[in-house]
Length: 480
Ligand SMILES: *Cc1c(COP(=O)(O)O)cnc(C)c1O
Image (cartoon, rainbow, N blue to C red; front, side, top):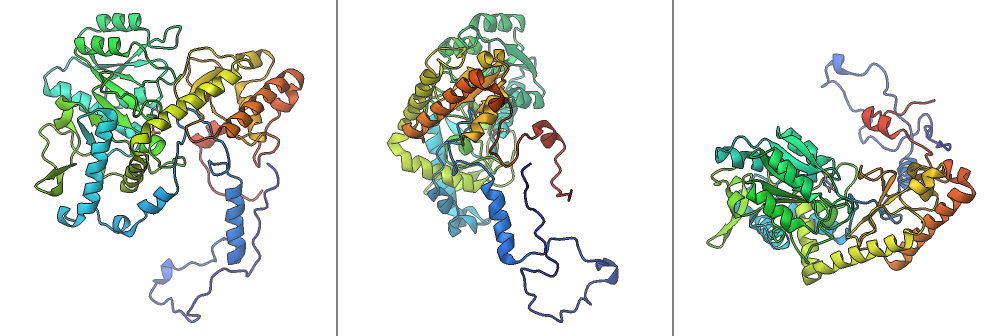
C-alpha cells in the first residue's frame, strides 16, 4: 500500500454542534449509558468531507474511464434517469397503497412489461426479480412447477453448456435440478451432436436447457433453431439468459429463437448502474403456456384501470416483497422511451465496437475462436504466458494505463482468458487508446516483462488478495 493518511483525528475536533448543551440524559436507564467515550475519529466537517472524497477518488468507475469488463459490463446509464427515479411521486409512494391511488406507478410498470414483451417476444412478464440470478431462480421454479402440474415428475435434469455463466448451474441447482453439461465444439458453440446424445441418454428426464445467445464467448449460436426444435421435440423447455441483451435487442429476440423463458438484467442493458451489490432488477418473460405460472402480482389493465393481478391459476407464489426494485424499473422505462426505435442502434454499435477491437488485437494476442463476434470477444493470454507473463498481470498492467481490466479467467473453456466488452457507448478514440495500451503491454511482455510482472505501479493499492477479501470480509480499520 502507498501511504494512505487515515489518522486524521485531532482530539477535541468535532463536526457537529449540539443545540442543547444541557441536554439531560435522565430518560436513559443508567445501565444503558456508556461508561467510556466511543473510539471515533475526531474531525471537523470539512476534513470528514475531504476524507470521503479522497477515498472515492481512489475508485475506478465509468465516470473515470473506460471499463470494458465483459459479460457483466455496465452499458449506457444516463444520469438523467437517476433524476427521474428520484421524482417524489415515485419515491414517496407507499408500496401498500391501494391500486386506485397508485395508478401512475402501476401504469409505468404495465407499460414497461409491454415494452419488454415487445423486446423479448414473450407473452407475459414479471418485474419482481431483483437480479439476474434471481430471475434465473424464478424461471427455474416455473420450469419445475410446470412439469409438476403436468404430472411429468421424471424431468429432474437441466442441460447447461460448459461456457455458461456460473449463476446458471447455481440457480438450477438451487431448484433441485441435476446439472448435465453440454460441450462446446471447435467453433465455441454448443456441440449439437453431444446435445443429441445427452437427450438420448437422459430420455424423458431433461426439464430444460439453459442458454445464452450470444454465448459468453460473444458468439452467436447459429444452430439455435436446431437446438430449440430438438429440445421441444424431447419435451423440454428452453431458458434464455438475457443478462446482456445489447447484442440482439431490436434485431431479433429469444421468442424467434424458440425460447420459452427469458430473464433480463435491467441493471446491465437498461440503464441502472451496477456494482457493489445493487439494487438491480431481473424481470422474467414467458411464452403463452407459462403465463399462469408467473409470480403474483402481475400488473394488468382493465376497464381503464391498472391493477395488481393476484389471480394466476398456477402461480409459483411471490419471489420478492412488494413490486421489486421499483426505481430500477423507472430507469429502464425511461431508457426504453428515450431509445424508442433506435434501441437497435445500441446493439449494432456494441457489436461493431467489439469486432473492431477484436480485429485490431488478434495480431498481438491469441484469439481462440476467430469468428465474427457479437457484443464481446474473448482473447487468450497463452502467447504471453509462454513468455512468463500471466493474464492476471496483463490485467494489472492495464490499470497503469488508466483502464479498468477486462474480465479475466472466464469463460472457463478459454485458458488465460481476457473477456472484453467495449459496449455501445464508447467512441473510436477511447477504443483506439485501449487497443494501443494492449499492444504496448504485448510489447512489454517481450522486451521488459518485469514492468508487467510487478504491475500495477500507479494504483493506490497494489495487489489485493481477492479470494480472501471475498471470503473473509473485514471492514474494520485497524491501526497498524
Ligand atoms: C451478470 C450475469 C448474470 C447474473 O446477473 P446478476 O444480476 O449478477 O445476478 C447471469 N448471466 C449472465 C450471462 C450475466 O452476464
